[in-house]
Length: 226
Image (tube, rainbow, N blue to C red; front, side):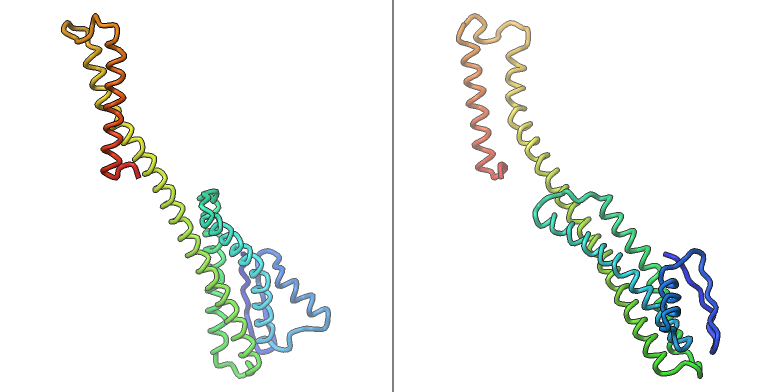
């Protein structure tokens, strides 16, 4: 965004800007094509409208990008990155920082008690201010929608993480008593049952399977496997 400062008198307008501005170039082209503003108020209105014309495609592109992110959420795909959302919000905030001061400047200019400002000029300036206001409101909506998308993505990722942690907790709960049992049978002391029985290993494995199956059944009855 490039700032433009104007000093406006009845028959003279002095403009200052740092870098070339496309809206100014459009205004110069209109002057060369014999469509010059008829008054200082008309010049300000046309300049503000051209600035709005130049900003509208960028704002429309931001709307399309946020629409695409919302569609990805509806399709339950989390391909939207936080970087893309942050870029959209940053662009909306930057544009808004210029839009609302421009609206305030146009509104203040319209209500100034200037004898050389005609009713037609005031009407045109009011139209430009309304258009800038609408663009500013769209930027506010884009910023809010981006925040909603960001929150939804965070919620879905948190839900996915919680589900995975729950599964790990259930698996840990199942294998904890099994590990305790096998640990007790693996200690290197006398008195371990089945030391000389060739079927002892198979019997222990069967008991472990029965114990694991019983735990799964209990967890399902308690609703912990949903």
